[in-house]
Image 1 (cartoon, one colour):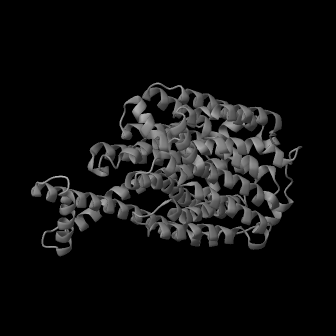
Image 2 (spheres, helix red, strand yellow):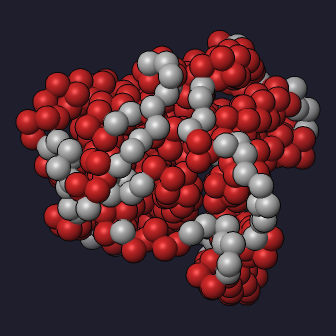
Image 3 (cartoon, rainbow, N blue to C red):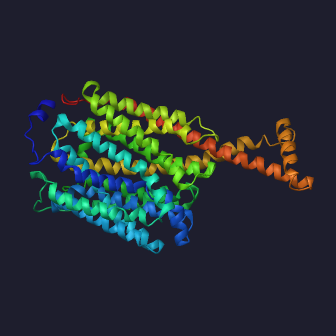
Length: 519
């Protein structure tokens, strides 16, 4: 197969491909930044609209649902309109929706605007991935995907930092307004520089799998609602969660049946027969689940347990970006000597080590303490994602890449949503477990507990002469410490689970077959 691929007649752009992908990288950065930039601002947005923190999560959910629905339709719209025109349309929709988010004055308006933004932005990543892969010959894809991978990892890493700074120094609408000038520049540059290969031009007699689209929409919408609200509703202890899960499974089964048996499926699932694509995608799904879940948990942990501001919690993620830059620089220089398979294993291994370090934290940590494991996470994600994207597409033909990229990004999107939801549930359940385990030590017959009560009562006696009140204050203080410790242990357990999950997928890399140009 490798000889067939090397001898295949390939389309080449008329201009330098490094220049052609500049607007593509700019669009990817804008989209990836928006995945996390609003996370640290949800509290401020909720306050502006007088809604609860749980209700404000729909600002994120609506974006994810829309992105998940549009991703599998990328191949269809490229055939219907031509890839360049569809890419420009996506940029315009995303930019206009960003402006709508910035001027929103109600919860309903911003949810609708974020949904439209997801429809426009959801296609940017798979389209960009396919464009970059096709614009370079196979032997140069490692370098081009290195730039792409760095952008995909770095942008959501600095998103909380940028979002926290803008929110505290300006106001939250500007986290969306900054997309407007970037989007306008990206549209103009795309129109001037981007070229379509012959097989990506507008095609005639293109039909849409409407039933597949309906089944997909029902599956993803219901699944996202279950994942977002399941923990608050005690999961399957609530009847409506059970029914939504049931119908989501039905829609999902019908979607896959329609794709396998339909004449013009929305997504060509036969691509999963390719061994490289299958194992590479599975590994990326797990990595994306760990990446997005850890990115959501760490700032919330610092804010809840250590009292960090939104800016400081965002800065805590900064070392991930530094780790990504260092890793990609080393990879770009040495990739030809070590090969993508080895770098993929090293990348996932770094995430495992980072998870182990996070599994040893305590309440005395500071920004410097968590910088090292965060840098390991950033370096591991950059190395792992970059190499796995190259390896998973290494045995595919150019005309298969748009469909493959759409399917892969859909599965990664679902994996990220599931990972974030499961990690939230694990935090909740594990904190309850540790609280039950530790509360038994708060007994007057426990000499250490009695000694602490005496010491703290003496301290509080400086504020009141009522002995009973000082004892109550001491017990309340110790109980608050117990609650914080139980939550800390829950985060420790979760980060250890992240390490184990990544460790399990390392052997999958061995099943990937590297073509001759793989190095």
